[in-house]
Image 1: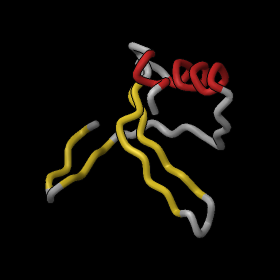
Image 2: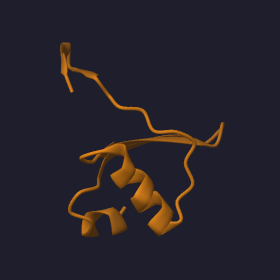
Image 3: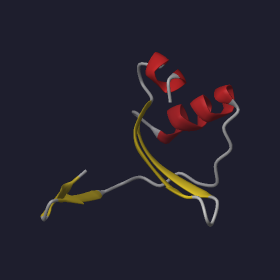
Length: 65
């Protein structure tokens, strides 16, 4: 999202969509969840929940997030 590039503390890293079910999952980076919810409210973006990622796996490697 271009608007997220204008905020130095909130960054959209990756998005996944299931158009059949009408669901989108996004990976965001921010210093705390309140920064993301504040950005969503400011940009009028609806969301269901925010979950902190604790473990990350890619290419067969697992590491703390």
